[in-house]
Length: 253
Image 1 (cartoon, one colour):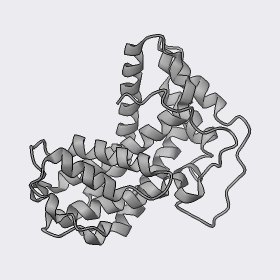
Image 2: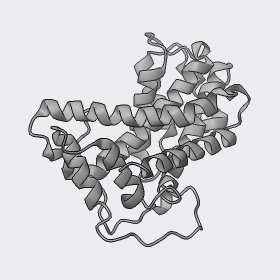
Image 3: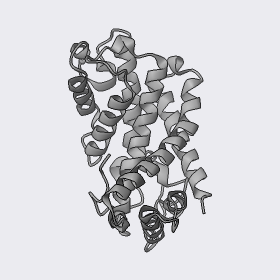
Image 4: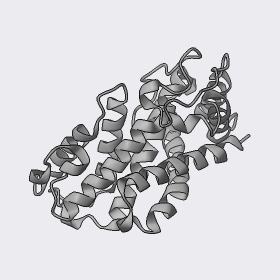
């Protein structure tokens, strides 16, 4: 992963939900509380340092409750991710059935079939990246998700993408989105690790917690009947899963 310490993250004056990313635009938002990141970053730094002084579970509790405004507010920040996740589902489904992908991305991506896998992944990530401040977040998350969850073949073969692979891609995508966002917001707290090896280990611990939560709350909803879902329905399931994750994390002490 190697993403720690790459950003100082948002500050206390940053809006709880950026306007471009709000999944419920027009609905009022509370005013951000002063020093809302302090408790999260302090606990996060202790977890990074290791030696049992802090836990990522407790840090995520402070992140959900304080830094992001709770389960009624924090999940609104991922509006662009919900759209990208729905489009990713739609695109792969179209290509798997021999379509072009234009309905999901506005671009004919049928020529990617049979191309080198890495090349196809890059093209798909670029096609799904929004034209706003979340472009890098979405592009990176799509790339990581496809590289991790698609069948490990030399070429991109959409006909081989079954329902299990599609569910795995969507779970991996949202795990990556949350991981990258939380890592960024942790900022300098990553510097509490005295050794590079501990930083890498801490990244793995944090990602595992996030991935487990996404798998728990999104996986069963998708598995219940993915083949019959529309993009809009997939987006609704994504939003519900992230709200449930925030509600679960809020209870962490």
